[in-house]
Structures are given as C-alpha cells and as structure tokens.
Image (cartoon, rainbow, N blue to C red):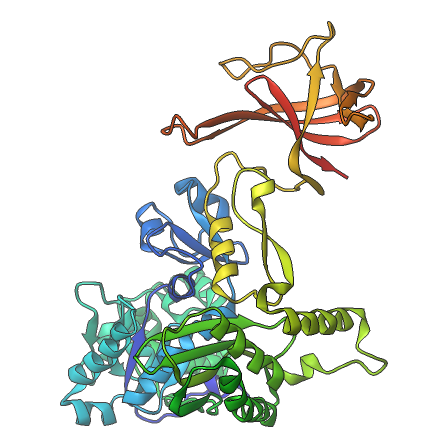
Length: 533
C-alpha cells in the first residue's frame, strides 16, 4: 500500500514550503535558452504546464490547449517540457537551502518543504526563517520566490501558492489550517480524476469535502479517501521526508606558486581528473557535461561548460582544461582549477556492447583522437542555427561542444522568431552560393514579381546553368517544363536600412524530371537556394 495514501492519525507538524512560480520557465532562462521577459509557455502532453508573466498577461493559463494559448498570444514561444532539465537547474537552489536549513524535501522542481521548528528557533521565528530562505534564493538571481507556513506540508504549500509578488509570505497560524483550506477548490488536491468526481457529486470546495463523514469516503475510495479527507480538514500528518544529498563529486586543485605554462597545469590536474572519474564510477555514474573553472592569481576567472558526445574519461577532462587555457580566458597565471560535473548519466547507459562498440563508437573514438591532436576547433560538426536564408542557418561548432556557449547561442538564435523563414521540411541540398537560374513564361520571357508581390506571368519552364566550357563560361541547358509551382512568399529584411535592405520572394517548383527546387526571385533575378532530393 502506498504510504502517501495512508493517514497515520498523528498531529500535523509545522512545515515551511518554498516555492518558485513557473520554475520550468525560470530554469530555461537560467540556462540561457530563453528570455523570461518574452511570452513563453512550456507544454506537456499538449497542455500549458507553465508560462511566463508576459504570456499570462496575454491570457495564457495553465491547462490550456496549445492552439488556444497561441490564439490568445500569437507570438508565444513554445517549449516542450523536460523534467530532467527542471531538476538539473533547480539542484543548485536546493543545495543553497540545505546550507541554511538541513532536511529539505524536494516535492517537485521549484517546490520544496522542510520542518520549520529548527530554522524558526535559529532565525527568531517562522517569519524570520522564511525570509532567510527566500533571501538566499534571491541572492542566486531568482527574483520571484514565495513561502508559506502551516500545519503540514499540504497547508504550507497552499499558503505559498496563495501569495503574490507584493506579499510573498503567508503564515497560517497553528490550528487554523481547516479554516484557511475551506474556501479552496477541490482542484487544489491536484488530482483531476478525483476533482471531476467530487464536482459531479456537488462538492466544489475543500470545506465541503471536510464536512463529509470520513468513513463514507473510506467506503468509497479506501485509504485514499481517508488521506483526502485529512488534507481537506487541515490534518496533513505526512512528515517532511528530507532528501539524501548527492555525494560530493567536484574536484579542485590549487597551485602554489601559480603556473603559467598550460602543460604544467594539465599535468597538475591529471590526478584530480582521475579521482573525479573514479568518484563518479563509485556511484555508477559518468559525466556527460563538465564545468571547468579557472582562477588566476590576479583574481581573474574563466568558466566554461563542455559537453562530451559520449562520456568523459580522465584524459578528456585534462584536454578540456588545456583547451580552455588555449582560449586565453585568463590574463594571469593559473592559481586554481575546479572541475564540476554539470550533467551525469547512469554508467549502464555507456557500457560497450558485448560484440564490440559498433560503428558510432568507433567514429566517436577516431574524431576524439583527431581533436585531441589538432585542438578544440580542429574537428567541427554542423548545427542548424537561426536565420531566414538556408546558407546562413548552417553553423559549424566544435565536435562534442553541444553544451558550451557556442551551441547555446545557436539554439537561442534558432528559437527566435524569424518572419519569412522557410518552414520544415527543409531542402536536403543547400547551395553554398546561389545558383543562377531563369524562369520563363509561354513567350520565353523572364518571369518577375511586381511591386504588389504578384507574378507578371505564369511560370512555364526552368532553365538551369550547364557544365562550363573550355573558357569557363556556363552554357544554359534545355528548359525544363514545370509541372507545378507554389509562391511567391515574400522575405523582407532591414527595411529601415537602405544600404542593407533586402526584398525577395521564394518559390517552390517541380520540373518534368520530378525534381523539386527552392527558388528565389530578387529584383527580377532568379537563383536556386536549395533542392529537395
């Protein structure tokens, strides 16, 4: 039987809940993947799970369908929910709370609880304890932090959720939990099936639920009914269950005197790197994302996050330290190096296969060795960036550099709204330089787009450049009849800048050989931007 559904009959324990509203959005902003000032909505199973204040001001609410949310806010930034990302970004905040008051229970990312008795004694009361905890998170850059105190974690959570920006703290006096909970809707139980059942029975508030005989709920719902009745009556007897803090996995090396030669620093961190990997292995983990922090003897600082395509070994950690030094992030000698696992994974997910490592692992091993010899930027991989034109969306980032600022910048650029950009599916072949072509009508005249965005004639044929002759000139091929075409779609850039302004129109055409082309007509001149292979 689930212990969470059993009412122990004990007296509720005074509890403190710290809550960061819309943590999935806050976590996105803290990772640099979104701007919290923009209208953002995080969706889970097609429903809004969290949204930013800007989106809420436009009418977006939790529980809305995606199309309803976008109808209320057409420029809404849509992000899929990621529980692992939410836990990862909230972990430093829990660690900070544990430094002030041990015994913190993580209820969900953005929401944690603890017994208030100890912190209240230390900070001179429940209000002082709540202020100290919320202030500690504010020091980490979280601007909106709420807190609630009440009899039991459930009452304290509802108290925190009833606060506002102007009044971020609410304390429910001892013994007043039932009166405080009475007007709240049954949806506060966060059980959609139960809330729907109670609504059909005419029970809409927790006070109405608490007024029912407890034995009748037990007859209908079993131990679950007893638990729900206790919550509604303010008798939440479930104790706060502190989490077990994760093991200390980071390593730090100090140099006295400071070192100026990169090879000396790399040799000095080799033992720490081996201990770092061994410590992860002792708890059956591997590091897939690594944070390296370098401190100079003059107080300057260089910090960067590195991602590995597989999992780091000791040599890979040393290489990242060497590469970071090569980027000239420090202006003085190195006084300290700190290695922190930014993201870990179960070691069982990275065990080599029984009959070999497979082609992907061999390719990764070869590329990693070449990169170790040539340097960080010696091997690059393509990424899709932001932009309106296909050629500018092709971005090359160093191999295995998916977690660094370079790719985060690529993701941020791609997430921006790009009016006029080409939607999926994108052409398989993108020409680095536009290929000059010609589009003609029935009279063999060139087709153009007038000032009103309309074609001067119906496209009939496409003329592609032929192979170059002895002089290097390209002779035009025989015209290809067009079987179908679509467009034009205008692309307008920098209308405020006469020197860099650009106005063009895109077309999609299919020729008689069943080859699909992406064409662009700009000031009467045609060229091919890509081909759908």
